[in-house]
Length: 161
Image (cartoon, rainbow, N blue to C red; front, side, top):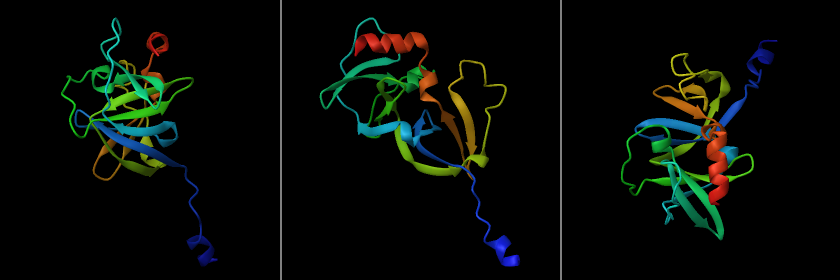
């Protein structure tokens, strides 16, 4: 019987995330939503769009809107550098690029080490934060990218691509 207990397999759900940094903070998104990660590409500005919409890129013949997550999350704007990436994700009915300061790694973490965001931050325009992952030496803010784009923004993106 002792061996049976030692062989017990933990069937806890594992989250697979792409982690990236913005303003020194670490964020994670579901790897299944990420289509690809690109170095900075030539971005064409689109007039009369929200300040966090950088413009559009031509990705293998497809025009994709690009959102600057730094600006969207209220961080100060910085110059793009060699670490800056565009994370291309497939949302409900749209492909969108998100500019991040740098992509860190692909993580596999047990769902059990995540918890709901603290009350203080939930509600203040942070519906897109689904959980906070507690790793040994750091915290990762898990995002629902579909929720980062309000209905108005989604409609705006629809008109420019």
